[in-house]
Structures are given as C-alpha cells and as structure tokens.
Image (cartoon, rainbow, N blue to C red; front, side, top):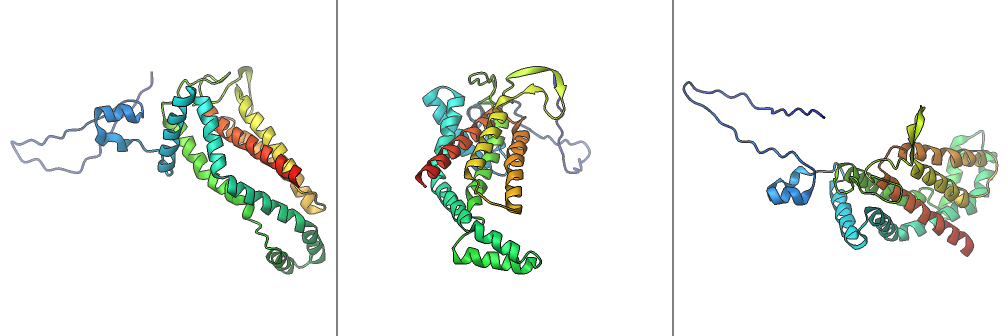
Length: 271
C-alpha cells in the first residue's frame, strides 16, 4: 500500500486565553474525474489542473470523451483525434512541404556559396540569406507545424498521465493506454530500455525514418553528411524519448507520423 502525507501551512495565530479558534477543511481524496468532483461540489472543479497547457488538455479530454461515445474504445478515439488534429493543421503541413521543396530547389546554389566563401563565414551567411530572400524561401517555414504540435503534445501527455479515463483501457495488445504498451517482458533488464519491450515507439521511430528519407533532398558535401546523420539520429532520439511514455500518447504521435508519411508520398508523386 502507498503512503501519503498531507500538510497544512497556517499563518501564526494568537489565541486569547479561554478562547478557541476553529478551521474547517474539505479534503477530496479520489480520482481526477470532473464528473465525480462535480457530483460532490461543483466549486471544486478547479482542483483539476493539467499544467501549463491546461486549457488545451481540457479540450483534448472532452474531444476524446466525445469520440469514445462514438467508437466505444479509447484507442480508436485517440486515432481519430489524431486525424482531426492533422486535418486542422493540414494547411500548415502543405506550407511546410512547399517550403521544403523551395529549400531543395536552392540547395545546389547554397552548396556553391558555401564552397566559394568557406573561409569567410560571415560573408557566406550573408550570401545565403540573400539567396533565400531573392527566392522567397523561409528556412524556418517547415518548423511551424511542429511548433504548433508541441503544446498539443504536452497537453495530451498531462491529460493521459493524470486523467483516470484511460486507466486500464485496452487496445489490441495494449492493456493500459495510460502506461507503456509492453508487448512482452524480457527475462533480463537491458540498459536504458529496462525489461519491457515496447513495440509502439519502435514502429513510430521507423515511420519517422522513412518520412525523413522520403522528404530529404539530394545533396552533396557537408550537407549530405549532416543529412545522413540526422536521418538516423532524429528517429532514434524520438524512439528513446517516447519509449516509456503512455501508449496512448505514442499512438497519437504514430498516427500523426503515418499521416505525414502518406502525405509526403502523395506530394512526391504529384511532383
């Protein structure tokens, strides 16, 4: 059994002789479930707080609950939530892909500038930025969808970690979407990974690898070497980051990665 401690910080109080002062406290010990708390006292709803992105967390949870009523499964609810968020960010994704294509188009000229001014970094950077300006290329344009995904990611993480809705919710081999998927338990503990074999983060990392490979441009020189390194480093890094995260969160990111991969393949065919 787990042990908990509850402490109260009170201001210094002077109690006159032959008198007494009383304090009345209401303490709720239970799951962070809004319906349960509202049934006890609607004024206590504010005790549920999901961190910095609480507002987004609340919206995501309400959306998940709505989708759960339709599909009667939390796993499918997360998948369709991922699709809805992807569709909402689709215009930005198109802009990101166009920005990447524009970057690829000017990449040969960028390589020429780097070779020409390799001994003058300041001049080299100035010429590259001027090239971007002439071709109306924004080197940071492809980062916007990912930046917008981050608040959603952290909000969903806090929602899944603290909400009781997904506790014990199963989906295919996953027994609890609020925990790592644990396909099976290894007989011995491995460095970093421990004794749990979680397949979802591995599938997600493989999907990220193919997405980056398909979207990468044909370059040469130092840029090509950096691209090859990032092609391996990024998926592996994300695989380690997600390895012990809730399966529901990994499922959300996996679906998003698959949708981006399909979109990239369609863009390449259209080109």
